[in-house]
Image 1: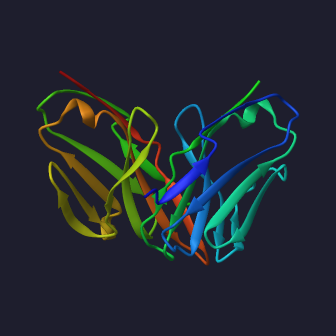
Image 2: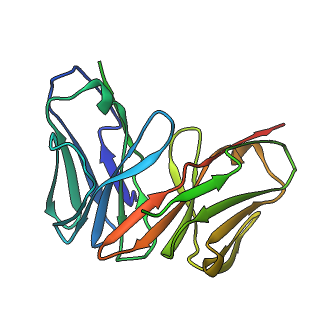
Image 3: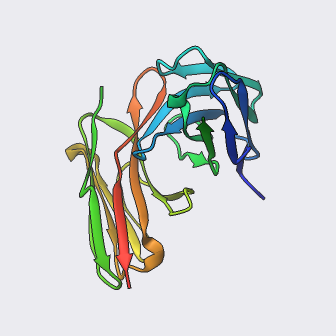
Length: 112
Length: 110
Protein backbone atom coordinates (compact mmCIF):
# COMPACT_ATOMS: atom_id res chain seq x y z
CA UNK A 1 0.00 0.00 0.00
CA UNK A 2 1.93 2.99 -1.30
CA UNK A 3 1.23 6.08 0.82
CA UNK A 4 2.53 8.73 -1.59
CA UNK A 5 3.01 7.70 -5.21
CA UNK A 6 4.39 9.55 -8.22
CA UNK A 7 4.33 8.84 -11.91
CA UNK A 8 6.42 8.54 -13.91
CA UNK A 9 9.54 7.49 -12.02
CA UNK A 10 11.81 8.55 -14.87
CA UNK A 11 11.15 11.16 -17.56
CA UNK A 12 13.53 11.98 -20.40
CA UNK A 13 12.47 14.70 -22.79
CA UNK A 14 13.81 17.40 -25.07
CA UNK A 15 14.08 21.11 -24.47
CA UNK A 16 10.93 23.02 -25.30
CA UNK A 17 8.55 20.16 -24.59
CA UNK A 18 5.69 20.25 -22.06
CA UNK A 19 5.42 17.46 -19.49
CA UNK A 20 3.42 16.53 -16.38
CA UNK A 21 4.24 14.62 -13.23
CA UNK A 22 1.43 13.14 -11.17
CA UNK A 23 1.24 12.65 -7.41
CA UNK A 24 -1.34 10.84 -5.33
CA UNK A 25 -1.53 10.23 -1.58
CA UNK A 26 -3.87 7.77 0.12
CA UNK A 27 -3.18 9.00 3.66
CA UNK A 28 -6.09 11.42 3.88
CA UNK A 29 -3.68 14.33 4.39
CA UNK A 30 -4.76 17.93 3.91
CA UNK A 31 -1.48 19.39 2.67
CA UNK A 32 0.67 18.37 -0.30
CA UNK A 33 3.98 19.68 -1.60
CA UNK A 34 6.34 19.65 -4.53
CA UNK A 35 10.09 19.78 -3.92
CA UNK A 36 13.00 19.97 -6.34
CA UNK A 37 16.30 18.22 -5.59
CA UNK A 38 19.20 19.48 -7.67
CA UNK A 39 22.38 17.69 -8.68
CA UNK A 40 24.04 18.67 -5.40
CA UNK A 41 21.23 16.95 -3.47
CA UNK A 42 19.84 20.24 -2.18
CA UNK A 43 16.08 19.98 -1.54
CA UNK A 44 13.95 23.07 -2.02
CA UNK A 45 10.21 23.53 -1.64
CA UNK A 46 8.41 24.66 -4.78
CA UNK A 47 4.69 24.61 -3.95
CA UNK A 48 2.37 23.77 -1.10
CA UNK A 49 -1.35 23.07 -1.39
CA UNK A 50 -3.82 22.80 1.48
CA UNK A 51 -7.24 21.33 0.66
CA UNK A 52 -6.76 22.12 -3.04
CA UNK A 53 -5.70 25.73 -2.37
CA UNK A 54 -2.24 27.07 -3.23
CA UNK A 55 -0.46 28.12 -0.03
CA UNK A 56 3.19 28.47 -1.03
CA UNK A 57 4.73 29.41 -4.35
CA UNK A 58 8.46 29.76 -3.85
CA UNK A 59 9.44 32.05 -6.72
CA UNK A 60 9.23 29.20 -9.17
CA UNK A 61 9.14 30.21 -12.88
CA UNK A 62 5.59 30.43 -14.16
CA UNK A 63 6.43 27.63 -16.60
CA UNK A 64 5.69 25.41 -13.61
CA UNK A 65 1.99 25.11 -12.83
CA UNK A 66 0.69 22.88 -10.05
CA UNK A 67 -2.86 21.57 -10.21
CA UNK A 68 -4.82 19.91 -7.44
CA UNK A 69 -8.04 18.30 -8.75
CA UNK A 70 -8.83 17.00 -5.28
CA UNK A 71 -7.25 16.71 -1.86
CA UNK A 72 -5.50 13.44 -2.71
CA UNK A 73 -3.81 14.60 -5.91
CA UNK A 74 -1.26 17.28 -6.76
CA UNK A 75 0.10 17.30 -10.28
CA UNK A 76 2.95 19.36 -11.67
CA UNK A 77 2.88 20.60 -15.24
CA UNK A 78 5.99 22.10 -16.79
CA UNK A 79 5.92 24.11 -20.01
CA UNK A 80 8.80 24.81 -22.36
CA UNK A 81 11.26 22.60 -20.53
CA UNK A 82 14.82 23.89 -20.12
CA UNK A 83 18.09 22.10 -19.41
CA UNK A 84 18.13 23.60 -15.90
CA UNK A 85 14.87 21.84 -15.09
CA UNK A 86 16.72 18.54 -14.94
CA UNK A 87 16.41 17.35 -11.35
CA UNK A 88 14.56 14.93 -9.12
CA UNK A 89 11.08 16.15 -8.19
CA UNK A 90 9.53 14.89 -4.97
CA UNK A 91 5.93 15.05 -3.89
CA UNK A 92 5.11 15.00 -0.19
CA UNK A 93 2.08 15.20 2.07
CA UNK A 94 1.32 15.92 5.71
CA UNK A 95 -1.87 15.79 7.79
CA UNK A 96 -1.69 19.39 8.97
CA UNK A 97 0.53 22.33 9.79
CA UNK A 98 3.65 21.46 11.70
CA UNK A 99 3.20 17.71 11.47
CA UNK A 100 5.23 14.93 9.92
CA UNK A 101 5.77 14.88 6.15
CA UNK A 102 5.78 11.77 3.99
CA UNK A 103 7.60 11.73 0.67
CA UNK A 104 6.93 9.99 -2.61
CA UNK A 105 9.65 8.03 -4.42
CA UNK A 106 10.63 10.94 -6.67
CA UNK A 107 10.59 11.54 -10.42
CA UNK A 108 13.94 11.94 -12.15
CA UNK A 109 13.50 14.45 -14.98
CA UNK A 110 16.22 14.71 -17.60
CA UNK A 111 15.98 17.43 -20.23
CA UNK A 112 18.22 16.96 -23.26
CA UNK B 1 14.97 33.79 6.19
CA UNK B 2 15.87 30.93 8.47
CA UNK B 3 19.19 29.20 7.89
CA UNK B 4 19.66 25.45 8.44
CA UNK B 5 23.16 24.05 8.70
CA UNK B 6 24.29 20.46 9.04
CA UNK B 7 27.63 19.06 10.10
CA UNK B 8 29.75 17.35 9.10
CA UNK B 9 29.03 17.62 5.36
CA UNK B 10 30.69 14.26 4.72
CA UNK B 11 31.48 11.33 6.98
CA UNK B 12 33.17 7.98 6.40
CA UNK B 13 32.77 5.32 9.07
CA UNK B 14 34.03 1.84 9.59
CA UNK B 15 31.20 -0.61 10.07
CA UNK B 16 30.36 -0.85 13.78
CA UNK B 17 31.42 2.70 14.63
CA UNK B 18 29.17 5.31 16.22
CA UNK B 19 28.53 8.83 14.94
CA UNK B 20 26.70 12.05 15.75
CA UNK B 21 25.21 14.30 13.09
CA UNK B 22 24.24 17.86 13.94
CA UNK B 23 21.59 20.26 12.63
CA UNK B 24 21.64 23.94 13.62
CA UNK B 25 18.88 26.40 12.77
CA UNK B 26 18.91 30.15 13.06
CA UNK B 27 15.35 30.86 14.24
CA UNK B 28 12.42 29.32 16.10
CA UNK B 29 10.80 26.34 14.41
CA UNK B 30 7.53 24.55 14.98
CA UNK B 31 8.74 21.13 13.94
CA UNK B 32 11.82 19.21 12.89
CA UNK B 33 12.28 15.98 10.99
CA UNK B 34 15.27 13.79 10.18
CA UNK B 35 15.32 11.90 6.89
CA UNK B 36 17.62 9.33 5.35
CA UNK B 37 18.00 9.38 1.59
CA UNK B 38 19.28 5.97 0.60
CA UNK B 39 21.55 5.33 -2.40
CA UNK B 40 18.45 4.66 -4.53
CA UNK B 41 17.15 8.15 -3.82
CA UNK B 42 14.27 7.24 -1.52
CA UNK B 43 13.59 9.69 1.34
CA UNK B 44 12.86 7.75 4.50
CA UNK B 45 11.37 9.30 7.63
CA UNK B 46 13.59 8.71 10.63
CA UNK B 47 12.24 10.99 13.32
CA UNK B 48 9.65 13.69 13.78
CA UNK B 49 11.20 15.49 16.75
CA UNK B 50 10.32 19.15 17.42
CA UNK B 51 11.74 18.73 20.92
CA UNK B 52 13.01 16.09 23.31
CA UNK B 53 14.60 12.72 22.61
CA UNK B 54 13.43 9.70 20.64
CA UNK B 55 14.98 6.34 19.94
CA UNK B 56 14.37 3.79 17.22
CA UNK B 57 16.70 0.81 17.32
CA UNK B 58 20.27 1.93 16.65
CA UNK B 59 19.17 5.46 15.90
CA UNK B 60 18.22 8.20 18.32
CA UNK B 61 17.63 11.91 18.04
CA UNK B 62 17.57 14.86 20.40
CA UNK B 63 16.25 18.34 19.69
CA UNK B 64 16.92 21.28 21.99
CA UNK B 65 14.60 23.84 20.46
CA UNK B 66 15.57 26.64 22.86
CA UNK B 67 19.20 26.32 21.73
CA UNK B 68 18.25 25.75 18.09
CA UNK B 69 19.90 22.44 17.34
CA UNK B 70 19.17 18.79 16.86
CA UNK B 71 21.44 15.75 16.99
CA UNK B 72 21.08 12.39 15.27
CA UNK B 73 23.00 9.49 16.81
CA UNK B 74 23.85 6.39 14.83
CA UNK B 75 25.28 3.52 16.85
CA UNK B 76 26.92 0.34 15.56
CA UNK B 77 26.74 1.64 11.99
CA UNK B 78 26.01 -0.75 9.14
CA UNK B 79 26.66 -0.45 5.42
CA UNK B 80 22.93 0.00 4.91
CA UNK B 81 23.16 3.27 6.87
CA UNK B 82 25.03 4.83 3.93
CA UNK B 83 23.33 7.72 2.18
CA UNK B 84 22.50 11.33 2.90
CA UNK B 85 20.91 12.46 6.15
CA UNK B 86 18.76 15.57 6.04
CA UNK B 87 17.15 17.60 8.75
CA UNK B 88 14.13 19.67 7.80
CA UNK B 89 12.53 22.37 9.91
CA UNK B 90 9.06 23.85 9.81
CA UNK B 91 9.03 27.61 9.98
CA UNK B 92 6.65 29.59 12.15
CA UNK B 93 5.10 31.92 9.58
CA UNK B 94 1.59 32.60 8.39
CA UNK B 95 1.79 29.43 6.35
CA UNK B 96 3.45 26.07 6.51
CA UNK B 97 6.95 26.19 5.04
CA UNK B 98 9.65 23.55 5.35
CA UNK B 99 13.36 24.26 4.96
CA UNK B 100 15.84 21.45 4.40
CA UNK B 101 19.44 21.49 5.52
CA UNK B 102 22.18 20.67 2.99
CA UNK B 103 22.59 17.15 4.33
CA UNK B 104 25.37 14.96 5.70
CA UNK B 105 26.67 12.34 3.28
CA UNK B 106 27.53 9.16 5.18
CA UNK B 107 29.53 6.25 3.82
CA UNK B 108 29.87 3.15 6.00
CA UNK B 109 32.60 0.83 4.81
CA UNK B 110 32.95 -2.86 5.74
